[in-house]
Image (tube, rainbow, N blue to C red; front, side, top):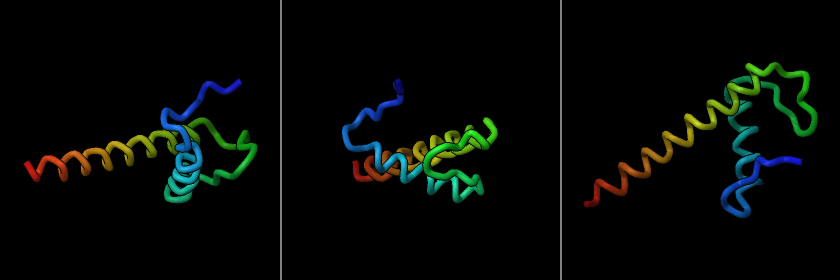
Length: 69
């Protein structure tokens, strides 16, 4: 049973797409289905880079919304 659920309904597909985009950017050969052949470092780098990019996007969003105050 997976406890890894998106907080926003319908976000799962977008997050999956983002995951594969990030993996491609950093050269991790992530594929649909089984990825047990990848190291934990490879998988962790995908997750870490996803978080980094999401934080950067949120910071840009916050900077843009506060510049109009």
